Image 1 (spheres, rainbow, N blue to C red):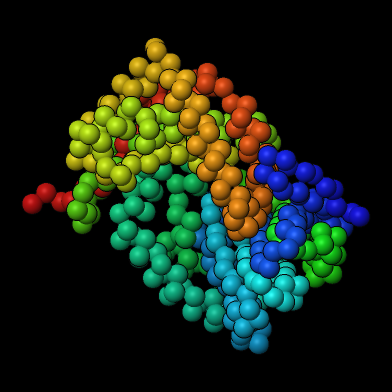
Image 2: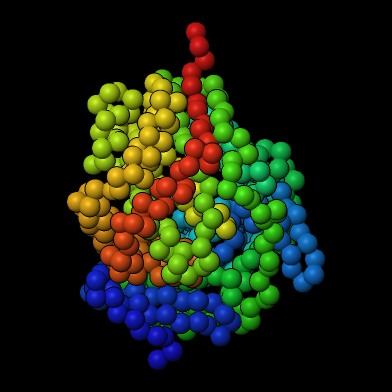
Length: 427
């Protein structure tokens, strides 16, 4: 056996981990007796990876290349589409691109090995022509215009531009109509060669499978060697203060929408980063969650409704707190938030609420782990960050109340916050 076995008693899962001869990391969660199979093939390459250095040469690519490449990877030389072939073979395939990763995946109940080989083959075998690349510009251009008309998307990127001065996280993953017009077949071939190399990728499978067999299939279908991995260039390091603290955008909305944000400094990759992510998520749940005094006061007064939410996003070397929803008075919500952080700083978090919130977070994670899709995608994403998603119960159980209090006091200082608002034009 070439795969290492690790048992996770808290979830009842067993994870097999191995590395193929070409550097590909393979993760398998056997599910004996289940009829469904799920596979995710991901690369450490997302929308913010615009500038990179490889073999002594620096590349500066247009915004939106990673997403554009994801769309075009399904094209086959005979004019067919891998989406069609997988669907005809009984699979349900798709893909997504985020700021720091691109993943291709499918779910099926039959002909799993055949579908897996097809997935590995088309993702590792690029085919682009000037004609097909140009044709895609119109399709993605429509997606871009739809995003521009979406108040939530517009508000999100307005907030990121308030917070960040230099980091490409402030740019849309999908790019702009102008930037995608610069993308050529050569651009796509260059970025595929740089980032779609086995040593920069992870394959995760869940189902009634033999882990060693999965590793063997990967070695048979993928190139025998891995190329050097690019060094991604994110520009000048960001400090923790926002570039600006307030912006208002007018759009046709029925109710004013708002987002409050702050920058975080992520820990180094590994369990420390995982702990920081879970601490941030738990602390924000304690501050603004449906059981929190803050949320209930503002909900009762009519300042908040059920659209309100909060979370912390960690990607590409940055972390971002995002708190928001709908409100008739976003500035009043911001002031109430600052008052609540100050109160917690003096009185501390309610220990009963802390324990209940931690158990609720753990319960939600365990429910999510029943879904093969969530498990596989999370294992791929977390592998790129140097930790394992299945460690969630043990890490969450070890977080102390004082860690959450310290997070809130540090991250949500008034000078570190930015407020982004989308409101209807007056009159």
